[in-house]
Image (cartoon, rainbow, N blue to C red):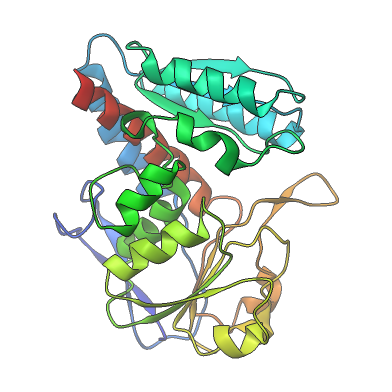
Amino acid sequence: MNFRIADKAGEPGRSAVPAVRRPRIRCDNVDTVSLTGKELAAAVNADTKQRAAALDPAPRLALVVANADPASAWYVNSLRKAAERLGIACDTVDLGADASAEAIRAELAARSADAATDGIMLQTPLPAGVTLNDVSSAIVAAKDVDGVSPLSLGLLASGLPGFVAATSEAVVEVLKHYEIPLSGRHVAVVGRSNIVGKPLAQLLLAEDATVTVCHSRTADLAAVTTAADIVVAAAGRAGLVTGKHVREGAVVIDVGTNEAADGGIVGDVDADSVRGKASALTPVPGGIGPVTTALLLRHVVVAAERSR
């Protein structure tokens, strides 16, 4: 899979996002192309803003937080500002870093029953001793805009309509945006979390990809990933995927957002060792992240449209 970028107008109906003029990837060049998400995110946001403006009252997102993590606080603030720019009201509910599972469930249940709330997002990390499985079932599926509840995951696995994890959806949409084929291709997903790896595997299967999910017990990670056409790094470990894990010409998608020693953000991929070997690589930041935010906010508007 060696690629060359060429301009081509977007073809409606090929992706769940509005058609945009986008670069298309073709085979015949070994240079590593940067798969930025900014153009795609801008197109999704423009559509979301237009749809939100047509709703009265405005769509409303509840952000439920139960941690004191600085990176989480930064993301919540960023998401709130992005929502407001698109005409989406955003309520931040801070339960504190010592909140119990019962308190979190109670808040999620209350927001699920609140007619004024269209979408609910539970921000991670959660307090020590509390897992997503302990509390996510309290989010009603119609408002589970990040697809974290057991019911949402079950709907996805069954091929039924429902909201899917925005990060997982962003990976597939970025690949479609750059017209990277999925049908019949081997995709190695590194990471098996309920919020990225597992839902992503289901989405890729729906696109007729052959999917291998790798994890901490995978005996020889490099043996699996070097056999893949596309490698998705979503394990939450900085620099886990290096050049030795990627065969020449593969596409590499970096989902990771890890804090670097200098306070910046780095991905799960050692980008320097992968460039020049991979045909394409998503940057961190600026790759999957902006598309994830855009899709999450679009889910809020979709939920509002369905409830009106």
